[in-house]
Picture: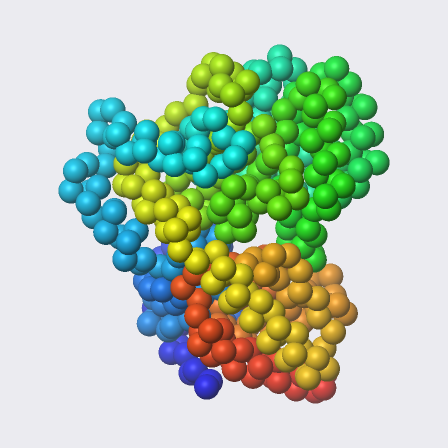
Length: 415
């Protein structure tokens, strides 16, 4: 079932207006300027597993707001909790009791958590974790994987504009899943090692995702224990989509601190830091806050989200939908003569073309054709599944991606 999209005249007009008042026309990870030509810049609404652009075109959504939407857009239970909290109040002159309710729920769900703090963005959470590690140890050095993304401020942003060498003077680097590289970085940090931060999965742009090995996860845990350093799991992207207790629970490795955001409140802005009892005093000693960090609406949304993830089969539905998508795409790519790789958790997949060039031309062409047919994927960033993706949604998406593969094959033959 091929969908014909309306020409994006409204989107074009909005881009022109934005160019006059927003630097670069748009900024950050949602800037569509670097994407192929079929991608809209502006979206106007979403429901369940679908989004609509400013021209009214409908897409099966496999980015989920780049991760925050975990139950589906406009989930009725979450929206009811939001409306109820709005009737009471959102930003008051002190935090709402719902903050305590949410902190208690996080401590209940996360095995390593003895306490929780709440913030707004993933960058807030990872940065607070680094500060807590330094406050607790009195040391400076923090190790992270080379090429890893942990946020968008000077100590961790992937872009160099405005960043000084001093901003990263006390960072050290290791190669993901490489125990020898990790041990060398630990040795170099010596007695000044405050902590090691790591993501559950390596998810660099335009690269196959790499699942952590048990050996690697245990090596980080052991290195921190030997050095008296703090192990930080950056679960901002994966957290609450793979395992409610933390994404490395299946590996049997628990961190000292975890950073959470994205899926924590089904699209409402919230982040959290959870930690072990020995770090409670250090967490109390740092000063972190923000005018909107105490928004009760986001906290109510989080309780409704996490409770559903705990009490329903939402996680299993996401995994089943992701596997159905992966199996279908594998069969299609082979049938059309392409060699592809699909990597990462099935709930957060990415398809790449094995023989693609340095600028991902084949991936960009294929996803562009998919977008033209109403399937919103990304050429180089991992995708996201939600609990709202049904078997019928996946089958409809696969009908359209099959057409996209066919068009790619035609273009390759013509070239």
